[in-house]
Length: 157
Image (cartoon, rainbow, N blue to C red; front, side, top):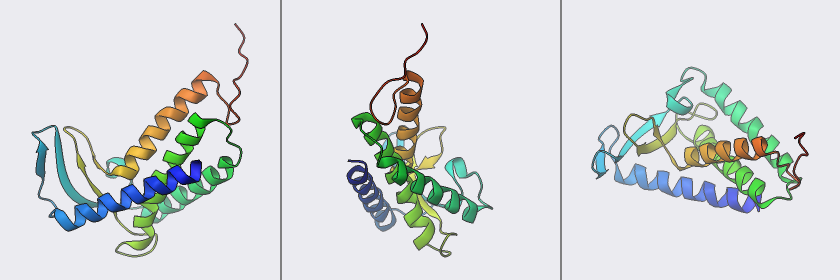
């Protein structure tokens, strides 16, 4: 389940990035829903909110390590909700890693294609939606005491 969802998310991410590059002009926003949603093609060498633009290789290594850990943990998952969370996390991380490894200016230094723009927010992509959704879901599962195997922690009452 984790790998299937991750593979589907990577495919969706890469198809939307291909669409953005073939359809949009870099730096020229296109209104989709008034000022609420715009397409705005940029190439991001950093992480979310363009943080870490000078440490692209470090971001690449960290995302690669996170992907390996998620793959390792995926074997232990016995909960559908955890499988969805880890699938979204892995799919989002790998979606952006494809860009990091295969796009200009070269392996580990590649820039990520971002094209979704909301008001007063960073420009992002489908991979970022997966990572963010996974982070929220993982936080909720952890706060509620759900383990990867589907059991729930006993808490003192």
